[in-house]
Image 1 (tube, helix red, strand yellow):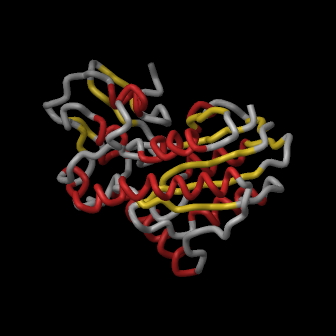
Image 2: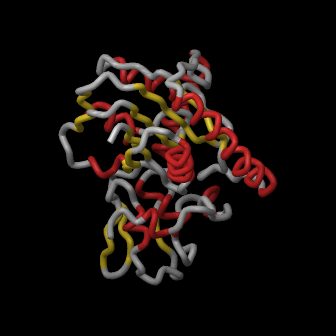
Length: 258
């Protein structure tokens, strides 16, 4: 096994990108969800090619991805690439990831951005169709880079404006609009437990057939988008938007707690 792609996904966008890429790569290996290592103190990397695929949250890298990078122990000197999926604004995510890798004595050989439908802000239907179509073309381009071990400048913007932007968004939106107190279930909830199963950080527990949100939320909104009865309520802005998940990804693909 010479390849590992570590991914994190709430709506299935990053999972779909990981799958498509793996099909096109010469090196064969496996695709692994980052949450599988949540209870591990260290994660050994002993392959020739390593990839990270994850969404942009609050204009930066998700906390769960950052925590995962801190656990890595590299036994090899692999070709490392990363792909961020985003709703049109990658910000400085790839540069922040690279900084995390630098602390491990490693760096990204290449970094890419794939525009996808958003999980929080609504994406118009025509743009959803366009992005899903274009994403496959972009993944084909990425596969060419990885197969040939080519280096590429990181995509996105690494400037003070973007860092201030992510700080403000994280402070205001994450702590206020997406705080654990904002999450609840409506009377439409049937107690199926899907929200608990798709939660990548085990933040949801079913109590008397009703979901209870704890304090470890990563704001992936998987519970909101995958609820079959649209019974998850967060805040006024999010609760009014249409549900979305990648059309090539199923609930069973997302259920990390079987």
